[in-house]
Image (cartoon, rainbow, N blue to C red; front, top):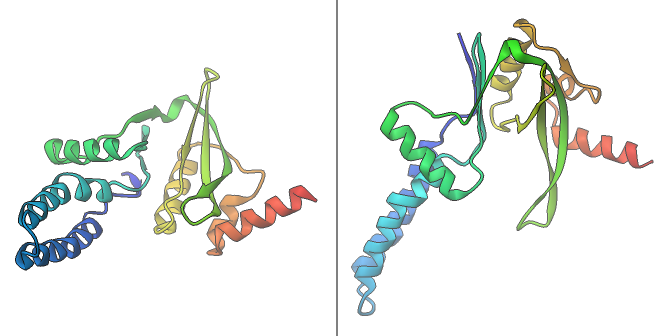
Length: 194
């Protein structure tokens, strides 16, 4: 048995691409200036080859089974595109990091304040700092915002398999209440500044 948090968003990618395809069709059909049809064809090729893969793999994904914790993070748009095509060729998701559960000492739960450009606001990423028995650490962004239930189930699955969580800020407890995490972390920061 395994628990997954996050998955490729193929339906969203196809929906966005369909909208742009309609726009491209009107450009092609309008024939407003010389070369517009070539532009529309190039736009379609870019959509199929680059935009669909990039949008489909735009979120963090991790899973846990009885032996390992798997994690993937696509740092750049090119990584997302390569991950998409690897998924198509191998017919399974390729994870970048695999950690044996029996080598994990504990997982520290923390957060990071990040700038959410271009909006000029700040947001918060929930981080897992995986501390190994050999002293090494792995840090990864752990929360997929749209599927909190899958996240909570994966954390419980890890706890049931003997993984200890050090959560001095009580973030995991707050996530189980169903409240907005960003408000809670904002309040924590305000309390620390006082």
